[in-house]
Length: 334
Image 1 (cartoon, helix red, strand yellow):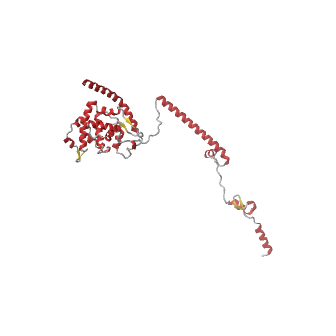
Image 2 (cartoon, one colour):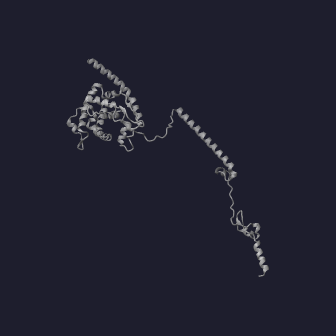
Image 3 (cartoon, helix red, strand yellow):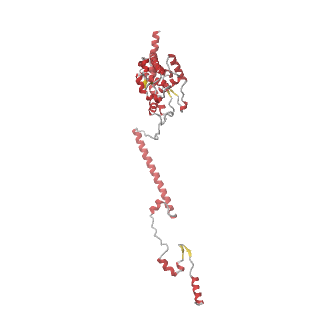
């Protein structure tokens, strides 16, 4: 090959365009390489797909696609806020209309929140004996004015020295069977032989001393009835026929005895009652409702107060009439 031919081929190589970075990638511009123009047109490197036109409504609902749609988005948000405000006002108007209709019809709307679990005294828990829980909810602290019932509760309070309330409640039917449903006149006539027959599985329901005390106390209750008209009148006279409400907040504040219990205990002992110490008497006062020792947080505190108000007024009037009768009898004997 001649030198001229070599120079011509070198010149052709130098004159070929150099690839540059265009807007669509590292390709040669079509204007600078006319020979490759048809090849690029036939087989594009990245064919463009047609972009579907987005409806205007979609753009408004889904927010701005580009900066040109920002004004549409803000106007749509403002429109939505107005609609929400209008809807809220409509609901409020309808609600007021319903409330006014209920008021005119005498219907009271229950706007209180959904009640939670019932609050009881701290010594009643979720694991407590159901019988004990029912006793707390239905009997303990309820004012009692019936002599036979008071005598039964006095016997149970004496039994607390040997048994728990749970054990007593489970044996309650047995106690009632042995003591003839706590009929005071019947118990006062029990003999030693009958007392010793109160055996269950070879053991007495109470100790012999306690059983004898029950019989002796029944005899003394009969004397109190003759003197004061009723055992109830005698027991309630120590608190002016109105239950004592301490209003304790915590179980640790509840005492096992009080000066009033000590006073009643001393009075009973002077009359010959047995097994009636201050602790026994205070338990008796609690269970018979003479004292309301439900905690302030317990739902039974207010209920027992309501029961006391309902029952105390006729009992007070009855007691006044009874005292007048007793005074007249005493004057006539003098």
